[in-house]
Length: 409
Image (cartoon, rainbow, N blue to C red; front, side, top):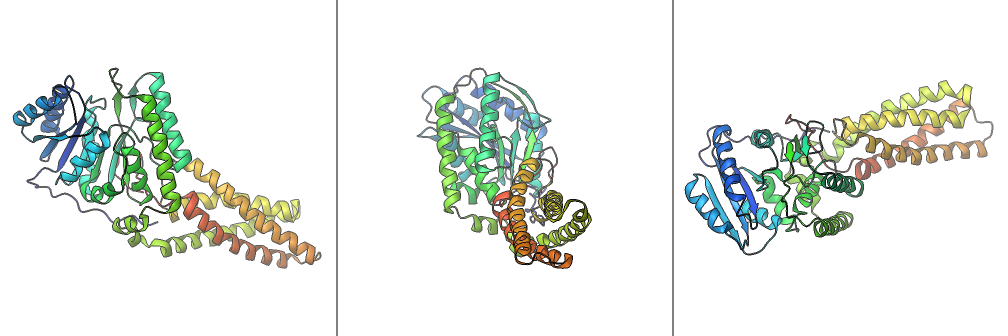
């Protein structure tokens, strides 16, 4: 699959804030001031563009609003926003919707994520190579300090996402994310959750729309004073997964429009995929015929068909993963191969059934006739395989590679 056209890079000499970092808070009178001052100092010293920090207060009832107002008055490029209702998703939605900065980000107020990852997080968005960037605590280069309970919960949550919604990103809930404003303007109206599931819903919709998601390994130290109610949050996340799953199954989300606005259709769209799939299929068919002809004298027609089809199915899935559907790296490769093998079973049933039918109708069929029937059956299986690959094995999403580079798939 061709690469998505690059977004327009942010001009090098930008007078207005290029980055708006939102800090959502609720009753954080203890952590707010030291964290915002630390974030401000880090950006002032390391970020090469103008920036803004927005404290988004979710109806705090302690001294948080007064502290936020004082920080906004004292620190250049700092502002605060007061909301009447609670909810991290609500705070991010409100702050990002009002911002004019080309790149929007957020960090948790406890700054559990090491801020040295902030520039690598937003750099591919500024350059136009990616649409969304997320910090991940589950990549190979990450260093995480947290208790076994939270570790198990985090890994189970992300494994559940991968198994139920077939997502490609690795860490949905790390409080360290960024998005281009032009992308946020299209995604935010579609995100319904106002709480902790906001991040996951945004990422699932973005991935299904074919947007580039860049992942950055982070160093992360758990806040022992975290007041997140794990049980209620987990139940809300499960409800959110069920809701977004139903929406995707029913086709109620405008994915086609999002893909067009993301530039996905300019990549050649369905026609381009078909051409690349056909080219891979032609090579696979030649390989299949050669393997079948080689194995048939030794193991018989049915076994030769199964072995040749299996070998070509593995190679075909790998080739289509990279060439037709533009996925690179190891992320999800085993899952794709497993699904590809299930598609292989469908093809095997179709081709074996056609071969059995031939031998039943014409027991003495010549070798060229066998090959011709199998090729015809493979052509029929190819169309079905393409449809299954496109809709199920490699659903419409284009995630960036995990790691520090800004390359897109």
